[in-house]
Amino acid sequence: MTADWWGLAGRRVLVAGAGGLGRAVIDALADLGCSCAALDRSPDVLGEVATAHPDIPTRRVDLTDREATRAAVDEMADRMGGLDVAVHAVGVNDRRPILSVTADGWRHLLSVNLDSAFHFAQATGAIMTARGEGRLILFSSVAGTLAHRDHGAYAASKGALNQFARVMAHEWASAGVTVNTIAPGYTPTGLTLRHLAKPGVEDKLTGLVPTGRLGQVEDVQGIVALLASPRSAYITGQVIHVDGGRTLV
Ligand SMILES: NC(=O)c1ccc[n+]([C@@H]2O[C@H](COP(=O)([O-])OP(=O)(O)OC[C@H]3O[C@@H](n4cnc5c(N)ncnc54)[C@H](O)[C@@H]3O)[C@@H](O)[C@H]2O)c1
Image (tube, rainbow, N blue to C red; front, side, top):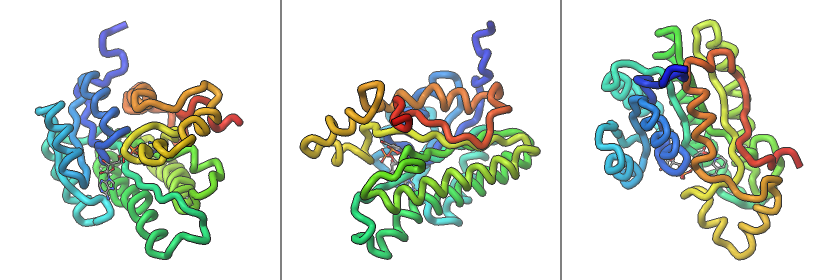
């Protein structure tokens, strides 16, 4: 087997959302020889990426802004000399019963979780389909399948994301672009830390996972590397759970 059997060396990867899971993706793919770039709305998050990976270009953008997203994607693809892999790891949650969700709260969550995926997918998909090869990877959630209480808007956004990805996979298959979603279970990151710190929550959630532990950000690195590889050209339209078996029970 050659050292780069997966064909990842030199792959040009744009990661949108460079916080917890997105950052783990950048760390792994950079380690495997990919040429990465990062987008995020947070200067602090981008600063941490730049400190760990001084060679990786970063750019601040709010992905709910359609025109700004297109401009940022085009600029980063130009800087990398093209685009082979696009990863969307942007999301927010607002845990509350459906009867307490305001119209503004609903709109905000759908905008960050779903509109941003639409804008990012269109901008990156235009480049990759024109080139005739590419990978789009989007972070969904076990909440896209399960019916957790207090997750009405979040679950709606992730269920919609799964279906959006499946249709893109169908439309872009003939152009050599695969589209898959990764659906993690609870993993400590900026998204979940405050909730997990509430009394009893971590133990309760851990008890729901057959493997007996919550996820770690490193748990998504292997599947992203596989999906980013030219070797995964025949895997498309899938929702891949990385959840320690959470969706089995
Ligand atoms: N952590 C978990 O337990 C978990 C579980 C299932 C699914 N997910 C999903 O994985 C993805 C990544 O989540 P995470 O855990 O890394 O969260 P995180 O909060 O650590 O990282 C998300 C990043 O997205 C950025 N972001 C948010 N809104 C943005 C916007 N409008 N424009 C640009 N950047 C924006 C944030 O600044 C942050 O760096 C999300 O889609 C999330 O729903 C996470």
